[in-house]
Amino acid sequence: GIVQSVGIDPAEARPTTGHVAIVIEPPEVTYPTWRAIEIHWTLDLLAGTQTTQAASLDLLTDAIELLAEHGLNIERATPITFNLAGAGNIAAYQVRLNPLELLDQ
Image (cartoon, rainbow, N blue to C red; front, side, top):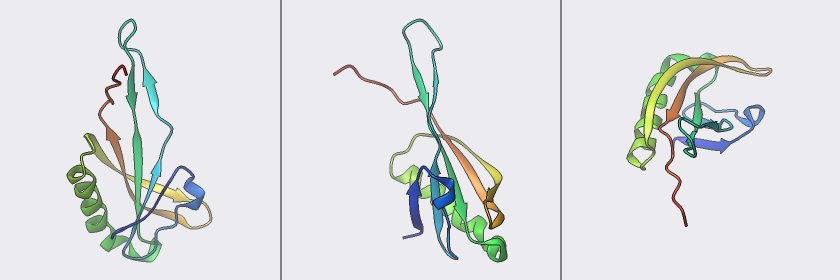
């Protein structure tokens, strides 16, 4: 598949040519009303290397479509530049998910 790795440590995200790495950011927790909680997750999708950025856009959009097809409730996807320590800037998308509904068990 096109997804090479999924993790929480950006330092370990090193996508190779033709692959996407996904970095899961810590969740944002808000309380819009009394006793209500909303949890927003953000995913950083990174693609390619500094020398393969032109082809990375197709990989990133394919990966976003794949996430949606597998049931992730995407709120928005925003293009960003991601700085990989020691590797420079690469193309990326920041994907924000809609709040998760917490169900009482």
